[in-house]
Amino acid sequence: MNIQVVFPVLISFAISVILGPIVIPFLRRLKMGQTERVEGVQSHLKKAGTPTMGGVIFLIAAVVTTLFYAKDYPNVIPVLFLTLGFGIIGFLDDYLKVVLRRSDGLLAWQKFGLQVVVTGIFVYYILNYTNVDLAMRIPFWPNHYLNLGWLAIPVLFFAVIGTVNGVNFTDGLDGLESSVTEFLLGMGGGWEPVTGAVVGGLMGFLLFNVYPARVFMGDTGSLALGGFVAGAAYMMQMPLFILLIGLIYLVEVLSVMIQVTYFKATHGKRIFKMAPIHHHFELCGWSETRIVAVFSVITAVMCLIAFLAM
Image (cartoon, rainbow, N blue to C red; front, top):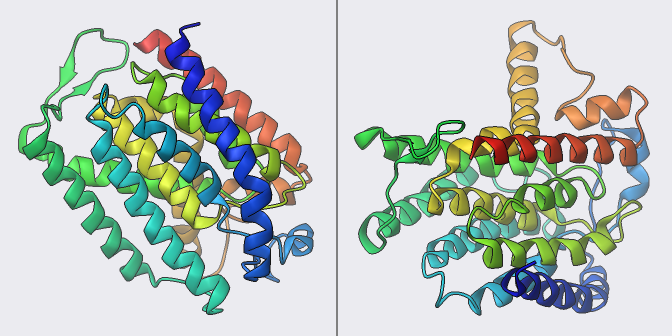
């Protein structure tokens, strides 16, 4: 294996492992404890008080490591902006929920508005300061690209914000988000040192986030992670591949949309026992570890299919 791939993984992993025992007690002292809904999955009530906002652990590790490779991969700068921009939105949401005890955190329109602003700056930067083309590689059709012309810009907004929220909805079980995203980013796509830095950070974070979790990533981590996935995909001209490797993200966000739409249309009836869909499986009797394992295996299989599609 190329040393350029191994080093960023190991460096980021080491930083994440070192930060864990420092950040987790700090969050606990600040009373950054997770709150669980009484009407939610009952087994999650015992998680109340577990420190959240732990996404800063792998976020710091990944950003610091990635900066070492910014000279060789200058297009990582807008990706880091998107990552940190969404991370800040997630931090504000977590802060309002956990510290100020505002149960809803940022209002829906506030969160969406901030996401549009961050994505808009990202679009402006790549169009004016990079040589990245918004044409997208077509899966299973080598060396062919989908060029949408001016429609590529609204599609980018939809893809980025949709991916970010899909990643956010996936974060709900111990180790689920970290495990699924590690497999997804393992593809590299020509950006192995950069994606490896995030994989390494997630590996270190997973030591503290695996069931039973000592810390949760919170919206701080999940929104930042979504920003990185979407941004990196566009830099590599591979947003269409997210439909394959990010199948779990897609299913999670669709389950929420279907549930809400059906609930309103039928005045209170539900298709799933609870959404996002990982909670449905929990209420069907699946353990958290089983759901994480199954979702991770599905992602690994989809990544293999994506390799063939390249």
